[in-house]
Image 1: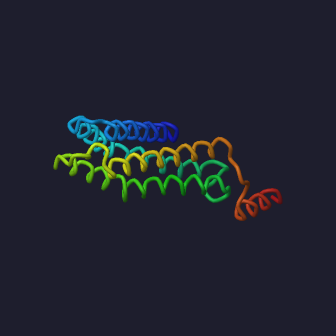
Image 2 (image 1 turned 90 degrees about the vertical axis):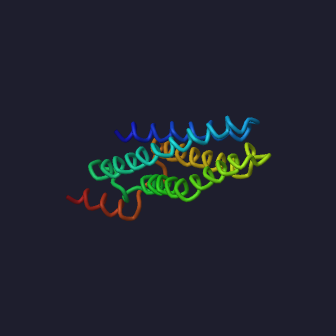
Image 3 (image 1 turned 135 degrees about the vertical axis):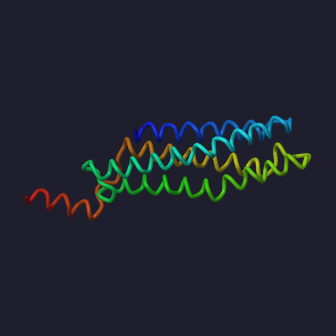
Length: 158
């Protein structure tokens, strides 16, 4: 389930990137508005997949030897997931709404407005953070935390 939720989250963020780029490069305000409306609907689904990914990740950390704080890669992955969610909530939604307001006011440069490019930039940043989390999950770099070393030493003595 963790892979399903995370894959869905990544897919939605890729869709947000494509829609944002289509709106920013488009010359038709109606098309750009449609892209933003679809992005708004994606924005409803993203929290479901993001929270599902975090919840299943926490469950996996509780029932597998990896744990949540035994390895640096698990901590880093959790921080990346939370940072993606926080920045999406704080930035992405407001920039999308700002781009829509500019379009509805028929601002001449609305399809390529700064709000449109900020929205694209945030989507690309989120995609990069999720890609980094995926690479970290596969590579598992950096070894154990001090807590993980203590637990490993204790397990050897038993």
